[in-house]
Length: 126
Image 1 (tube, one colour):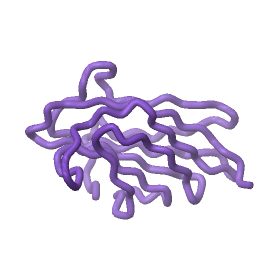
Image 2 (spheres, rainbow, N blue to C red):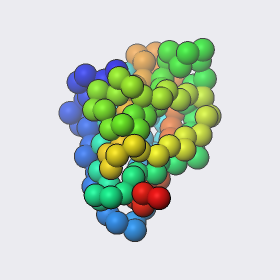
Image 3 (cartoon, rainbow, N blue to C red):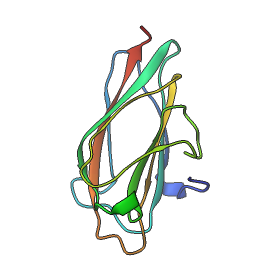
């Protein structure tokens, strides 16, 4: 769960119709820093879902993703309390329930670093 994202790492992104947005850790292609709490809120147009695909994922792999983790709320929950959790090299392919999706990155104080890059696009309800 994310309650207070770092002020320099809290993004609201309006995804234009028929366009794809690329997001990545701020230091890309270098590894992200330890002790981060970041959040990306994706708003897709009305009548569309958000499709999130992260094929380039390189986070430390730990049991239960306790070290670093990507979190994705397909319901658009801002605190990510219902999020699916990813770590290691596991790819992300998720579709929002409504027109909003939220992704978070939480890294530990002892993180060796990692990186990720994702693409988000609107997808019509079918």
